[in-house]
Image (cartoon, helix red, strand yellow):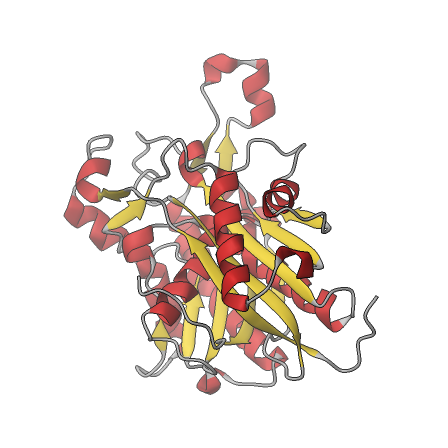
Length: 335
């Protein structure tokens, strides 16, 4: 075991997998009574990625992980722990994290994390502590979801929002603190606003209920996120010894553009702060949302090496998490 002596953690690599197929609002409206204008106004989404049958959850997760390791200049054998955030896997007994390890050709310890859309930030928080504690020198954090596997395309509340994809960070030991403490928690007594219905046990007992699919009370989630997340953002900054005035980049969970706009207003962020808007083209990819959004900003030159970025995640459960990170020096393809 590596002896930890006042060492910090830093992002060393970023990788993603985006589905080949981009689905327009017009195509979504073949399944629901809606319009392109209504969807754009309500969510900010123009297109979203829907994975084809061969773009399995495993393929997307391993591809993003491989991409992150490549940008970090590391071999899988250097990884001391693999953490995979996910909420859509249909095979929990053979966890996705273990399958990712196998796909990378490593026997590193692996752990799947389910905090829904906040899962990636939860895993980043755990990775930071593993590194600072000396348990690992490099931790691979992956967020991957095929939300279209658990969405009813005829449901007007959810079918236009959720999408598929994967993203990953390599987090390693550093002589500077480039991943701040996580501010996290749950509001479980309100968790019924976003659930799988019927659940898998109910479906097994009575398959006439139809396959499990996400049901969502969108207005209640909007109100909760808009009221709760500004305080979580401030807490993450305080934990890092910073203030909101120190933030260069805001990367909120890509749930809904209107939620993001509400949070930005509440935080009174200056116009100079770059705010991720990956949802416009990617939709809500749940556990993959944060790394996909940061990757797009870095690849497009909107987030620069050394910038101070605030990651802000929230989702079903209801779970939330936030941390301040430094944008790494990595070369990424333009997206």
